[in-house]
Length: 333
Image (cartoon, rainbow, N blue to C red; front, side, top):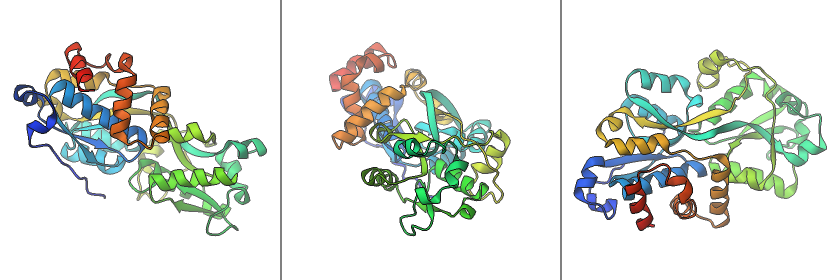
């Protein structure tokens, strides 16, 4: 498991133009930033709002889905995971809540997060018979392996993602190897995105894991395949989301509720208005897509994207914060 790099700001002066009294009400805050675009920008939105609106000394920490949620459930740190796809680790989250280490705040994405296996729309249009994952497995020749064109390829996400675990388990469950497909480790979020971009540029077939909302799916039109299997919640928890489970069964992705997770000990020590913010802060997929598209077009990072969102969308974020905090945030912009 990747070791989380948990950092905190010890000097209250780094929290921005806030008083020591304000900072004392909030203190240091560690916010987990996952390595995908929407999570990166949301963690930076939280950092800017907490520091400038509520006098916190918030800092971003490095984290991915599995190590972050596991650490929060077991150790109560980091303090906040702004975009946690909790259905990927249901037992870990439940254990953390049962043991008093973890609570949920806002549903970060009210529209839900959509995960699964996707193909380019031009492939779907050319082959209307391919509707399900099972249909795609009948045609390895349409999704050639970059290292061996005699085989098909199923592209997976990087290690540390819950979706990577589920994809690897599904690959085993449906015997994709026997259908002459190889599971391709893309190594990073950039590697996964690059594989889709390369396929589109060459109008080649592509099959693999991805999710929405994302800027990439706004640029490259993709079609999500129907898993073709009923959802079995018990099996999903028992094995599909557990990396070392040896006997996964075919199962179906369903839209995820994406929550803000908060360490219980943080929620108990912090000022109530900070928790009020974390319970209200949510944004819809169309807004997320627009922000991420701007970030992509401008080669912007999460901090840039956060400031762009805050400047362009006061009608949204002022509903999350107190009037006094809103005035301070506007002044800081």
